[in-house]
Amino acid sequence: MVNQRQGRRLRGVRVLVLLGVLWVAYLVTLVARICVAGQQDERGTADVIIVLGAAQYDGRPSPVYQARLDHALELYAEGRAPYLLFTGGRRRGDRYTEAEAGALYAQHHHVPASATLCEAQGRTTMQSMQACTEIMRQRQLHSAILVSDPFHAFRLRRMAHDLGMTARVSPANHSRVRSARAQAYYVFREVCIYAVYRLFGL
Image (cartoon, rainbow, N blue to C red; front, side, top):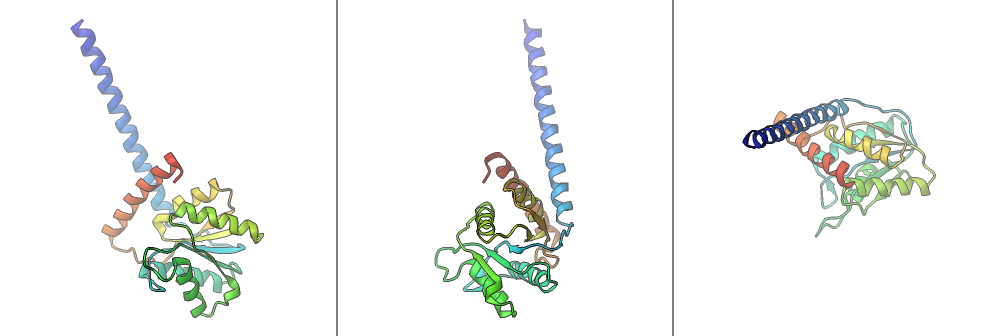
């Protein structure tokens, strides 16, 4: 009887160890895929360039957001797409949405207002991507180039695929997230957010 109990415990421990090893292997693989995706620039031609929002201060983009905007403006100047679509809502106390700050920045850099579009309600990446999909449908825009920081590229590509969006990802090549410590933090954060997205669709 004692030997049977010990045998069951041993088998239980082995199962837990195996599950732990598989989980660690999955996380390592996910980290690698996130890092690799951030190095892949799929810029081509599309109907619209979508810029994922980031913090702004009374209409002035934060350094992280500005790096994304500058990259998008570079793509626009190359003739990659005729429209820029800015995303992101307003935080409590803000006068401007992230999308409005992006559009103002683009117009200040000689992009005509007629070429700028805004999705100003989204509070999460998924909400913004869903809203962008609807805007594209309404305006009969069929393809997009997605611009954000490199660590964001893998999840963006997956979200676009899940939403049925025809999209390329072009990470901001002058991202302000530069230090090894900051990059490690954001990659770890992205692993957690991606896991939540895959489990709950958030």
